[in-house]
Image 1 (cartoon, helix red, strand yellow):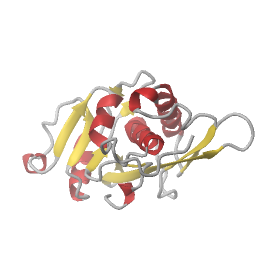
Image 2: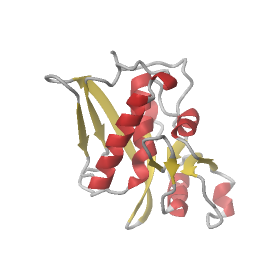
Image 3: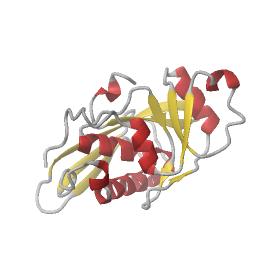
Length: 196
């Protein structure tokens, strides 16, 4: 995770698969659009719900860019590409919403995502973080992957083993803004910011 998220535009998400919890990465890139308007490209064999999450993530990030210290032009009128590797594995569900917003905010601000942080949660256009399932499996997957901090929607953690909670700091959040405050490196590091 540390190697993958060292570059702005990459965030570490948590998912549930048939085999239990797993770590997934969301990668974001932006380039000049060919022709007028803007375009969102989504790859990685994602289902309709994840595609919807990607659209919401981009809309929220564009709408709140100035609040995040992002040049409003950084993602506007550009082709934005969101990719979730392991493309041969079908993926769907709303829980990658916060990871997609974080990857986009990281790309646009040039602030890398902290390598110790994994996250899960559905995002609304108002920037709320909604509950998702599989929290226990996701926290366990983060622990197995060596992550020491996990961002989740506010909820009960009674079923997560105490031994894991002693080693993984869990951050329950209600808003996307809280996610970004936890996940992004301080604003002084602006490596790789998208040129307007």
